[in-house]
Image (cartoon, rainbow, N blue to C red; front, side, top):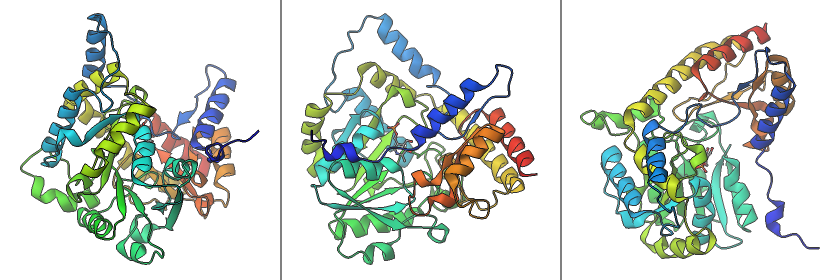
Length: 401
Ligand SMILES: Cc1ncc(COP(=O)(O)O)c(C=O)c1O
């Protein structure tokens, strides 16, 4: 019997690593030190208290929690629009904002609205695997731009100019996953202009906004010092009239399992994405939208999480070189360290398996993010509990001896 091309999409390997770490944890005696989870980009904290309380209040009030409009609750869309004013000083009309089931559901909506089967969509390698896998499932062609530390693992205008034929789309992420690196504000601006001028649809994944650590971000922070709520990053929503912006409550807002994201659409894609959403998903979960709206007023708790990530990042950048992980990409943002382990192994899958078995640390082999060069990279995620990150540094240092 025929199986459609969607069935040929490659797996998202980190899910296999998670399963291996779970299986390993299940074999350990209850008094064993346990597995330290550094394989998954899931904050160790739950939703902010105010978000959970809003959900409880709504449920206790007996709210029926029906479908919402396909683009989401008007109050949540208005709150997201206010977020753009508060955090970026940018006016974004709520009519352009569509609430989605995580950033993950925004991708197929955006790709189906903007591209046709056979269209070519470029992205830096290494990259977040579902970008390419979803495009492939939809019959579109991911085109990889091999990037390295010389360009902070980010694409450049020169790389785009060299593409022949030109792609129909470009996906960027700043900060990105897995490398944690960023484009400076002027670089993103130049890419957005180039894409608009050359009829290339820009998709900007901004899911790690709010998690930036200085360095590149500081270059754009100078003008923002007078307003502490502003984030030292720019959004592509203000840089190009044709760009699609994708974001989510999963990372900064620490709400992975609530499955709420959003997209800021250019005018020409509002109606196409609306009709696709109506037909494909109807709406994002109602109760989770109420919680997400409340989460946007939980700054104090969320900034506490950010401070913890910042401390773990600094500690690991200092300690990991003592364990031989001394080639770390400039960790400008997100909560990942992308380590070149080419001097330790030429098989990152076997290396990560050994790390899991011998020292109980789960990390993600680079092949998930870069099939050609990922055999010499490992990604550590440091958004888990701070004490566990310190324990990880100790275990790795002892392992290296
Ligand atoms: C770069 C990037 N984009 C999108 C997502 C998907 O996020 P969501 O939980 O909102 O579906 C992730 C999740 O790890 C990610 O790292």
